[in-house]
Amino acid sequence: MATLRPLTVEDVLRVNGSRRFAAALAATSPFDSLTNALIAARCIWLNEVDVTGWLEAFAAHPPIGTTSSSVSKWSKEEQSAALSTATDSTAQELSEWNAKYREKFGFVFMICASGRTAPEVLAELKRRYANRPIVELEAAAEEELKITELRLAKLFSAETAAPPTSGENHISQPDKAAGSSNRTRPPITTHVLDTALGSPAAGIEVHLEMWKDATSPPSFDNKEFKGWTTLGTSITNNDGRSGQLMDNVDNVAPGFYRISFNTSKYAPSGFFPYVSIIFEIKRSQTTEHFHVPLLHSPFSFTTYRGS
Image (cartoon, rainbow, N blue to C red; front, side, top):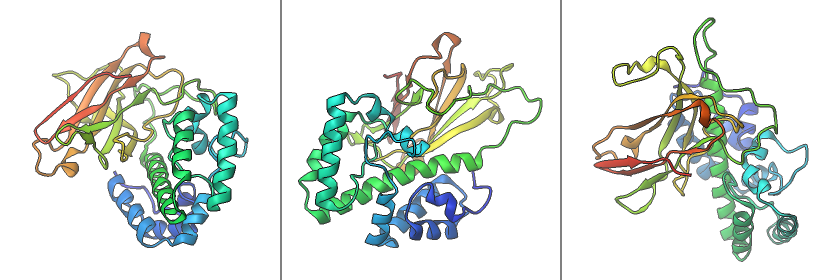
């Protein structure tokens, strides 16, 4: 998949608040794949953006736990798990530690909060508060890069999504009003573990697709690749967790889904060029959560439905 057009600086500023980063990434686009876009973003962020640019990007983020109406939709999504698990006392403590952190380091506490609870965020804030300024600056830059990669995947997915053909039979996701979901995470999530190393597998490209032809479900005898439509893409982070692959909706559309993992780039000498997992969500399961992890080694893989 390629971006349909070169990205503008304004496009990239939604992803990362550094104007130097935005200008450089926009000038490098369009990209022929999400992987290449993420590689370019990492190279620019770590090698071309200076400390001033890092601080400019940090300043574009609200303090963790902020509930102001001015907070962007993506920030709200990323902090949804933290906000939903924060008690009054935890929220107060987060606010106090955010202030202490800013006073010590001079910038907002940066953390990729997607999927993290309020106690987890608070514990990490306290742990990193003990860092020396130069160490913490680099830690914050790494967290900003994780957020940038997550948001770039969302932007890339929006760029490459094609509208359904008129009259085409398809299963569509329910419309989601802003802030209407009671979930703390999307209905479908995944992570990847490297069972050969006994550690999370970072840097694996992940695609989530849905079967669009309701009249002819996929089966052993019907493997038509054109029946799939992409919902979202991401790259696993250092914890092996994928970023958000779909909207955070209360009721996921019933039907067939496929999660694919680009294992060939992660393990070039391995046996599997990629791994695809197909599963069905029934009409009686639309309010449930589906965590579909991949346990991978160069010569084997397995999966299960987790929580």
